[in-house]
Amino acid sequence: MQKLHKIVILICLCAGIFLIIVWNINNKLYVEIFESDGVVYKSVLTRSDELFDLKLNYTLNSKLCENKSEQYFAVFIVTSYFANVETRSAMRRAYSNEDLKQMGLRRVFLLGFNDRDKFLTQASIANEAERFGDIVQGNFKEAYRNLTYKHVMGLKWISNYCSNTKYVIKMDDDTVVDMKQFLDLLKKLKLPSPNYIVGYILRGMAPIRERANKWYVTNDEYKLSKYPTFVSGWLYVTTPQVAMEISNLAYEDNYFWIDDVLVTGIFAQKLKIRHLNLNRYFAVHAELMDCCLQDLPNIRCDFLIGPNGGDNDMFYNFNKLSAECLANKCPHRSRPLNETCVVEKKDKLEHGNAIIHAYKLS
Image (cartoon, rainbow, N blue to C red; front, top):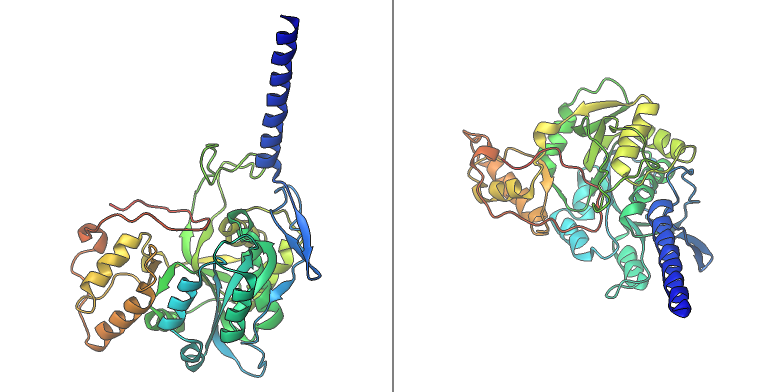
């Protein structure tokens, strides 16, 4: 009986140690630093009560902006998952680097590092970068809790290598944009100063406190009951000045893994950066974009920007049909699309994009 009692105590002790380890991993976020070819990589982010401490190195860089005497209208920095080769290819099919150059634009894809992908090697990414010249890769592991590193890396890259542009457009690689109409909209915007972020504004959003939720935020990570006003990372427009100010502040402030909140909310608030509203041009559900495609090119789409719902063909088709619609002077819709759209609901395919939706499809 005494032996059994000791076994029970030992089991309870082991279980307690296991629970402490799990709690520490979930709440303190274990950090692994390793080196490869002389480059220091960060595997998982530090705690949010610590500084943004990554010494950023580019394992792959782009020379698309090397001509400093040339002034660009806009540069797109696209956050892309390491293995999303087909998505990047689809975006290039819709608008190649040469197409973009003719429009006064540049585009780079922002990647992390992944040495455990079963289907794609780092050598393949290096080949893609050499072929297209549009890959910027940082020394951090691909993980949804590392998205802030990727986001800030893009802004820092603008400051270091591509500040000779009027606009900086940050977007995710699952976001579709009607390029022609969106650029026309930008040209018409009367912006009061270079100190702004323009996009889909989210106000009064609260941290998710349910432990089972993928986007669970602890009180240690974020103490307040509401986030400051911020802009969705699907797509937003800003300036090289703001990109520089934010990337500089990042290394003086605490890390928070929900990048949209930190970069366009917390940092923007500290830097007194203004938010300008383009919400009416965003479809917040992929189903709305599907309905637009069904009616194009006969009826103009209500939106210029929206999620592709995993349909990579949408990058090309949406732009092609929208251009035909404009050329034929197609009419506007008589009733709002969210009142008439009837399609099968899509499950969002993602690799950790910290997107916060404001509304449900009615």
